[in-house]
Length: 222
Image (cartoon, rainbow, N blue to C red):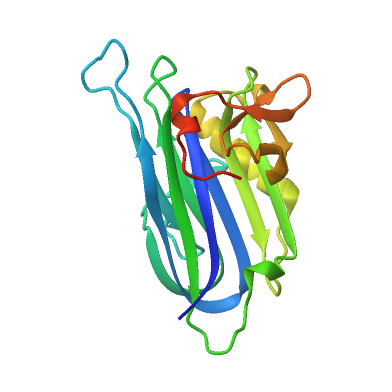
């Protein structure tokens, strides 16, 4: 069993639900994949209210995952953090929720791994031929979700416009905001090398640091 793909995901929720997704495309292989929560950080609000939700979960969506469809949006009706199948693509999700915008931030991280079970495939993550990094944000610059797409050598090419449209659909459904109030921007990992947690400067469309104690304590940098 050969590990050929491994990347971290991280997200800070400051205004209810938020998420990070990581899409991987590669030649069709028999694979074993998992995603594991590696850290979770939250704190009790200054004025504690009972039954105040705060949570994080990580799961994988593949072409074989049962989906529920409502209009143009769909979500998995079954959520697994470990899969074993023959496929050429999968998407890892990390969802975080701090309960409400009046609550302190909640931060979580996870690690996504894909193992090759096909003999002598000889894949190497360093041979990624295409990568995109997109963020969807509201009018105040709060990043609701991010989507990273990685195409390995021999994988089916992904469409950047389609990735942006999927990000908008998810943000509209999860946040309850109308898509007219949502914007998508591309960013480069070096733009957030100081921390994976950021907001968007609405005047420039560029990422800037998210100054929260939970984010500053996060183990992943760059």
